[in-house]
Image 1: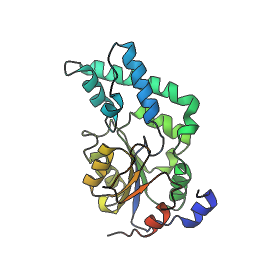
Image 2: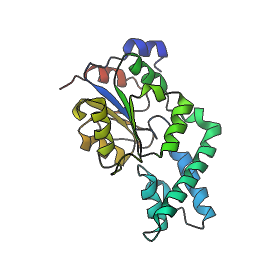
Image 3: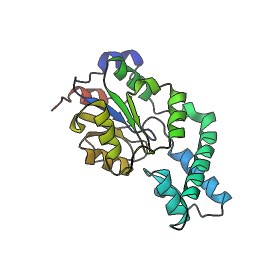
Image 4: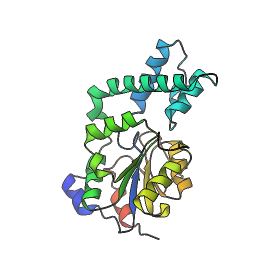
Length: 231
């Protein structure tokens, strides 16, 4: 395990690089609670929940609701079901939040920003969930820009969220290290042209990523980052 003091001594990000972070599965291990919330919410509405984790993984809420309710659902209903389910998710996650923060990520992000490394959050998540996670982790001030699911016209796996984040930071996408966990997110990160680090909270392996880590204490992370240089 990498201690906070050791992280201060070992994190070395070359000038000209930026760090872009997904939220669910990178800052917070949320898949199990999201799945449980969807199962409970669907049960309330008499909708089968079989395979809901696969249907939701890496997708934006409006996409998930349309898959579950069918194409005839109205825009107002899409918004209402999405908001109600996410409210249930936050109620369920609240009491156990600290147990689900990805190990080492808070220290890693804080140290990166202390060193002046440009950092952004780029996620398909709802703004209310972004606020929930950033307020509970205290990491809001560490991100120079935040791109959430309502700001992108095309959600992941489209690369728009990452391209937007890189543009706001003023860093070329190929000089961005992108931390992702889901298949759609990894696809978006690759399509953006970033240097992709897979955080294996959701997947068991990610051979398409340039680096795969268990969490931010992984001993492979610091040496790999120190070898990255801007192009």
